[in-house]
Length: 224
Image 1: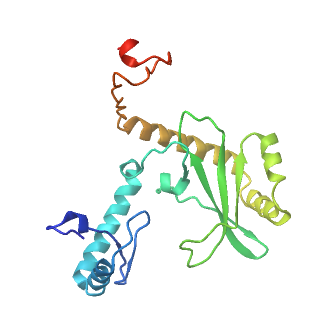
Image 2 (image 1 turned 45 degrees about the vertical axis):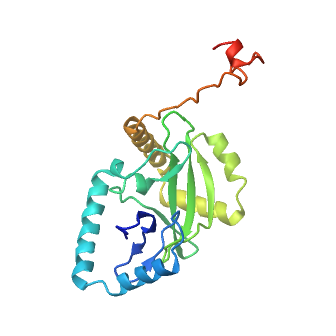
Image 3 (image 1 turned 30 degrees about the horizontal axis):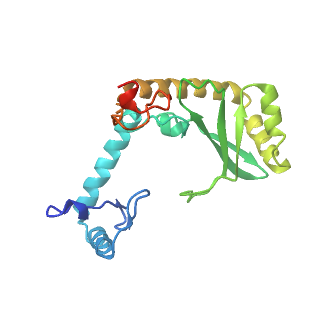
């Protein structure tokens, strides 16, 4: 919401199609007035407006599936969920264990400069309402068999049994994850190539400050 008279009063929130709203993570907390405005706008939104927003959401999703680079931002060291990277890929890592349905999510460090040859696997129990569901456990999956065995040895018996169940349902799991690893690194390279260059600004050294060369002398009597 934008305040034309005072831009500092502008704020954002998530409008849900059931005419409720949620605050956004990493955004300033809404004031009481802003909260009332968001609640009133959401509750009283015209049905035609909701239909329009639904159409735009479908269009945005379709565009994002074709052009994930348009909304992804390269962040060194961050692990990206594979479905987030390539939303058009519908191949799930789901399996059954003790008569219950589970699934695993694979996440990758997409930095092409980091040839880490591993990924993060997070395990979830399948639930109809899975929003904000915390993983049952997470583990590092190494492509090197010896390193993978050492990592698996750290798991509890139950968690290790779940990992075994996943491998039994997907016999080519290792090969499949290797291909997804390659795809993730390829996406990382594309994002890195599209990243705007960072301009490094060096602060000018004042004459009486220590010289940055490390001599211990004042700058004006050394490298000025």
